[in-house]
Image (cartoon, rainbow, N blue to C red; front, side, top):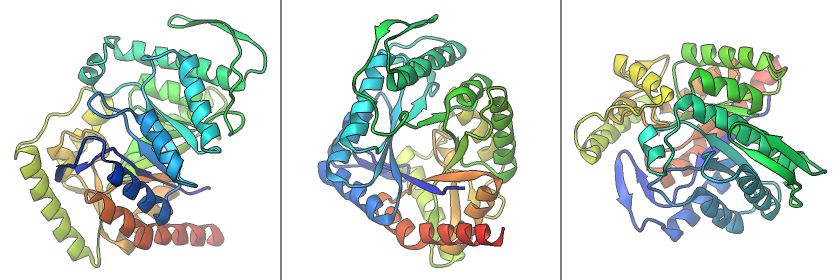
Length: 357
């Protein structure tokens, strides 16, 4: 199974434990962070989406211009522009970057955040709209003759877009969402289904659930799985846990010393329940910052030496996780450490496992 590592590039340095540094669009930081992860051996970086943040597609175009091989996983919310228009944007980015573009489809999220951009549909309606949106994007990328589409949310007539993706037949689709409606759309459309860092038992159950849903569409062997985690490394396990506790104190001070309630999306609700039930799962999955921050996104950590964390990652790989999205709390430092110490160890363990098999 192909192993893939994804990082993150934001427009400004910040984390739960670090108040935002510099301007809202910090060009030196964007360049340094992108180059650090490209040098560290990450395959892609995520450009996240949020109503308070700079635009992910424009940031991706900027990063593409000064990197050579770093993939660009652009978070994108269906429903805020025409799917044919969005398909042309992604095809253009893919051409400009010589095949480095991918889309991370974000349908749900916090309902309040969606409403700030004028989206008041219910969750099930949003996912139904996403299904049509992806139908049309794929037709736009792949059709060699004019097509029409007549759906509940979108109608398209006589569309033939000349710009096609560099990657054939289309741009890869990464999909996030934990509800039943989300899993059904993922089963139909996703190349990679993305999850936040949960215990092994829960991750195994979700993989089985998604594969079962994909089987209805004949796609159970075509969908891969990604896990998002926040590794906290130390020279020893003891040093790593000491650092984790320091980061927790800094996060408490940064957030204001009180826990935030989870967002309305299913993934946050699910992760928050796990995080508030136990502080540590399995060998080293740490949940305290997830509990503090309301499990708003990727917020659980694997804590330990590089060997301990690599061993923990391998257990997820054995379940079927082939993509890992890693980002740190000390962003530049952690990206460098991952490249020097963590990624090579995980690759070596996966290679040894394959050889043994």
